[in-house]
Length: 316
Ligand code: AVJ
View 1: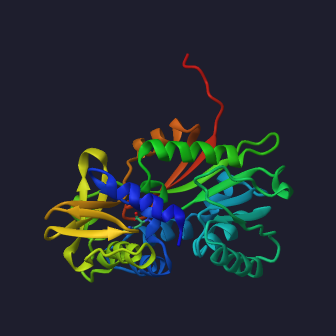
View 2 (view 1 turned 135 degrees about the vertical axis):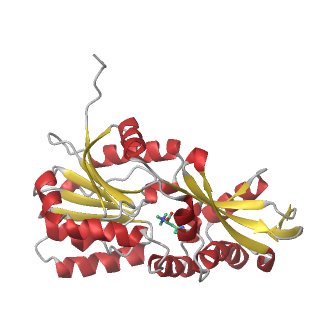
């Protein structure tokens, strides 16, 4: 049993608005369900981002240049990485992930596919400070953070992370680090809600799996059949929120602690922030990154931004 999981769940369920951090979706079951989500007709982000990475390789190469060490934050199965490595002639590839087995397997696959590029996997939680291997400390870096994972964080957490990435990526001397980051775009609320509430119910299963996981791993007695998947666009905060809503009054235990929910009460399980050109620039700027290039797919659904770390300047 994961102590951090238990601490987060218990603290979250004690709150007036019950909430569990979205990172806990991804046990084996949840990771598989997310893979299934990426194949759904309604879920455009994966497709749109892959289109950009496939079409813009030559432009990435021109803007980034050769010889950087690519540091991927939360590399997972690294499916998008070959598109980038093929395009830019990097000096090394450093995938970071919390799931060690997954990470080493994916790293070994990439090392076979790119025999000329040294691969140094690092098992780490990228939400904390990460120490990169000394062998790459002198190389200029390119951070790679695809998938609009940044959208899972509220702005203050996103800024903390983007700033700590800048620290992680700083080379011993000289060249400023760059960051290639996927950021999903604000669009028609109906399209957004469909992407997070698909007709086949895969996203509902993904959301409900969190309740099953709590029951499995934390001695939970949540009556999962009394919970309903809800995805709604919150315009003021520019985000899709996912909740688990009680369809009747319920009471349950988690790790021996008792909780209850009224009918209509929810557990908030995920935020997925969406960005505009300007809100993306502002978020990056707040963390010391200046946008250098921006690409979108043919339907303007998703953006990939190349930013460069910049020294703070006083306003003239
Ligand atoms: C993996 C965080 C980018 O927010 O779109 C997909 C996760 N949640 N469907 C997203 C997710 C529901 C996804 N990210």
